[in-house]
Length: 597
Ligand code: PEP
Ligand code: MG
Image (cartoon, rainbow, N blue to C red; front, top):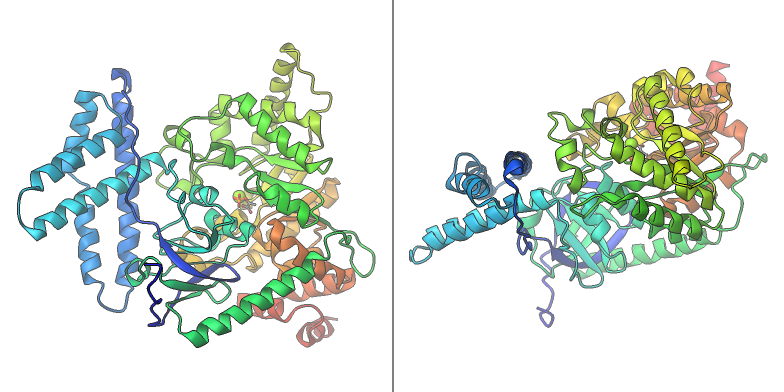
């Protein structure tokens, strides 16, 4: 492969840009194979639970195959074979020899579902072997493929398919989960392209945090590329160029060099305070997905961590971290932050964010984004919540810590959580562990109900953090991780902006701090608008911080207020987008202001 001249039959595909920037590199294709499978005994009392786990994996695999089929149907031509194959795969998941055999093995041999699948695939393949028929040989391979899909859903990938990625690779996969992203080595991956996935899903957020250009929604991806083909990702335009010709390659190499020069310039702002031209100081903090991001946060000049997503502690493992393990991880982070404050969010799993060990607890919701997730799960599984709270309280003696609660929808929930915090503190005291200052307790405002009840919530919260990602998802009823409705996902929709404005005002009235930590915080086009809506604190992916700072250094508060007023006077999203693209101080904005006065 290495010595071959790369193919240059250039082909361009349009998808959705989920993380901007340009990446150029050889394709590293993540296929479904080579999953190491653990085998263990299931006690008789847990057989039903294991069968349920198997059926839940079937449901997830069916859903994934359905989505892939829909994608294939959108291909212009030549996808009939893929569609037929995906239909055949779906067929293998109901009442088939594969499914029946696995059920029997779990029930009779008392083994875990993954191992049962592997054994049953082996048995089916063996019965095909010896039949000298290429068609049947292909069907045996298909059964294997379906089995591996099931196993991947069961394991939720706590094996590492990215272990051997050569440096500079562009990862090509049907789908990338946040857990996958956590396993990729940032020094080796140039960017990624997928068939499935929306712009605000967590894999996208992580790509942006790591500065990886990424594009999703490319239907013919897996069929269009061979391992080692050169791929260009144009994250801003949302397109990929497969096997580029020499002229295209040169053009993109120049663009990449230009971007690198700009980034270098922005890095010189590291120690410059984010103050507007008329003297208002803005707080810029970093969102952390993984502890390794802390270095980038400090490098970017972040004043602290405005959002620590603690899900990383629960990913890619079959068990739950205990209190000590969580405490040690938090203590290390606090230590690395060297006195800078950190806002630690309690576990926010459920929906698209999954934790293997919690599979049974989060269960199968018909509507996962509206189901048992985040603090709802914590309050239903108090041991889970209390263990994490104990770890946070213990860690809080090492530096300035705040506790943030995700997916809050009512005052009662916050009161309940505060009770938990106090109870955990008393329990720690009984164990001889003193927590002299209980950290401030705040709510994520990311459900429209919480935003609309912000005045009441402010009375039971020490601070607010607005989660514009979920606030957009729930206000507009758009799944943030679904590429098919990605064009409707709009954090600048007037309804979302009004909820942000209302929340900020409620916090000001109650005199509690309010920050915004959704993805728009890191979008420099939104900075003036958000300042104008009353926000003074932002938390974002570390790599996006310098550009936002540069924006702040060029703005005055009256300008920001006028800009926000002009935008809030619009009811059409397209007009809002146009104003955002034009930026502060544009003719249309001035005209608008004159018209109103
Ligand atoms: C949000 O919803 O805006 C947010 C910051 O939380 P997450 O993206 O982790 O759901
Ligand atoms: Mg959220």
